[in-house]
Amino acid sequence: MTAVRIIDAHHHLWDLEVRDQDWIAGAALVPLRRDFLLGEYQPLAGANGVAASVVVQTVTVPGETPELLELAAASDLIAGVVGWADLAAPDIGERIAALTDLPGGGKLVGLRHQVQSEPDPDWLTRPDVLRGLAAVAQAGLVYDLVITAGQLAAATRSAAAVPDLIFVLDHLGKPPIASARTEPWAAHLRGLAALPNTVAKLSGLVTEADWHRWTVADLRPYTQVALDAFGPARLMFGSDWPVCTLAASYADVLAAACDLTAGLTPAEREAVFAGTATSVYRL
Image (cartoon, helix red, strand yellow):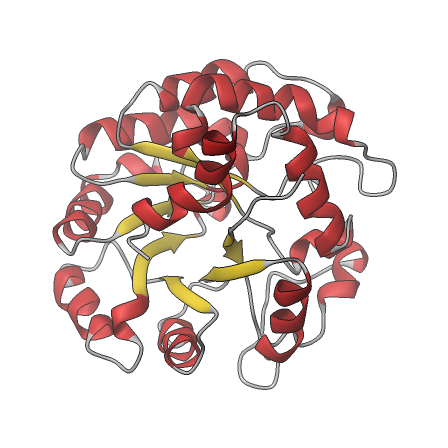
């Protein structure tokens, strides 16, 4: 089973000669320590039936987002960019406006911050961050949440505090798939999903599983919780390429997503593979 139309709502691109990716450290991540360019992604997307994509930031520096926007401006494949800006900056509204004025600025669909790396577990509920999130909503953008399972409760409080903003949970909040536990992750995920301004991505799951021995059956309990909590109309597919290549090929990630959603109706599958991303990111 494959969807008629596929939007890859989550992938990355980087050129190490232009910008270092300081998070790619340690022996396990050595395979990612090279360039991953649009010229490599585009044929992969084409071979797997991907009609459009959303490229997502990886580093918390101001320079990366303009580069991604410029890339998107010249690409028919990249329909949206989830960039970065300092949410805590007093002039965050002006900074967002400046990004939208850049070449490709019309393709800026959202912002993201590496909350998973923040030492403060309540970073998302800080007053300055909440002000920044309100500015993101004011600009008509969405906010991607890259968090650990332990940060889901704080994310829920943040989403409740900024009801005008759509929060997009990346990678289902990184459930502990490798250890085969579902709680307390599942309870916290349901708490987030209970808020109407939240959606989630079926992405990044293979790298939360055992990289070398994962099966679709390992992923199924977690995607089932997400399908029950959010429903197909609030879920979207993302490859998380090239990070996914630590555990699986692009084709394997897509095949797993198709298998995990095989029980849905055609309309529900269309939502997961294209419709939700199109509406949420206004592609």
